[in-house]
Every structure is written in C-alpha cells, then in structure tokens.
Image 1 (tube, rainbow, N blue to C red):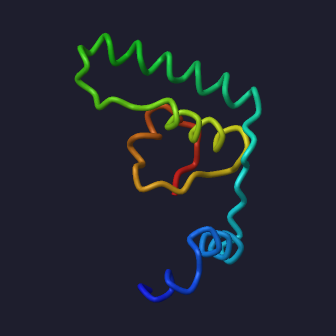
Image 2 (cartoon, rainbow, N blue to C red):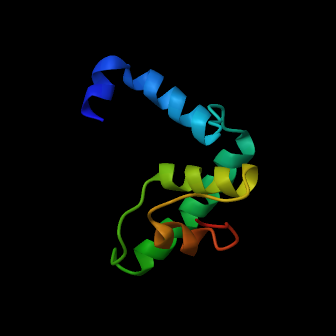
Length: 94
C-alpha cells in the first residue's frame, strides 16, 4: 500500500475508491439539510449546557453529516454509532 501512494495522487486514489465502492459524494448541501442540522445542534447544545458540559463536545459538522444522511440517504456508515444514534434515532446506522 505504501508504494501505491507514490504512484497515484491522493485525489486519484479517492476517486478510484469512491467509484469502486459506488459511494456518491454530495458536494452541495441543500438548505433543508443546513436547517435540520442547525435545529439538532441547538437541541444538543441546550442538552449539553443543562448537563454542565458532562457530555463530549460535538461540532456542527457532525450534525451536517447526520442531517444529510437522514434527509438524502437511506443509511450512514460510521465508526461512532453512539454519536449519531442519540441525535438521529430514525437514521439507519451501519
């Protein structure tokens, strides 16, 4: 794998990976996604303040990812199930 990076540029490797795995990237996020993410982030921020900051801090981008998956896809592949399960209970997680 180490030599692979010397032969191909990271962008080319990424494009080949996405094509091979049939992953589609949506580079333009709809207003609906931004609004949903904002609402969910506000709910999270309120919950975190009430807990005195006991829960780990999260970024808006986490909510953009979850909102996009909820509104525009049928599932989300993640290594952090707990992060998304609480704020996106209806999202199918893999």
